[in-house]
Image (tube, rainbow, N blue to C red; front, side, top):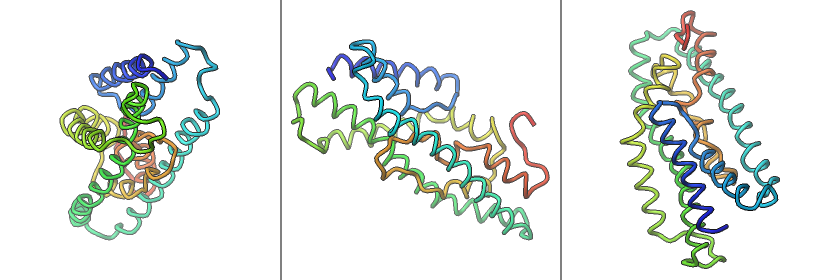
Length: 226
């Protein structure tokens, strides 16, 4: 892997992310990055330069499994919440879940950073290794890489995430606190090896399961196209 290939992969991922951001389309930056690097490698040396077994076992399969598990857990969690709070006045339950979302949102933010920021660190670490700035036997990136990536993902989410937030929060389903709270309690696979995309697991990225679960316990859920 050379610096030119790393740069080409980054450009491909960045262009795709900017396009989807401008259109307000929720898209996986992780998969865009991986696709950009794989595409750059194929363009440079052909398909034999890609470790296909690793791509399938560590990217494709975890992405599919994560999406299925996230849907099931979100659906069951939302269904249970509606069952438990069936006799509670809606205003009272909404206030309680709104307070609970403060803690659950903090945990989701932590999981988001432990998953997505590491991929950015990995690319920078790969570039430093290709340049010879760090030893190829090193297993941890320099501290300045960790700090810069943490600051960048926080700033990017705060300043640039509102288009996607509007799409996921209002464009697909009408999200209320008790619909959003159960999926946000899901554990992200952040501490495992596969680079699972944030698109498959966070609470704001799985509207179909919440719509289905809410519909089974609530006669009039509001969903996209309804």
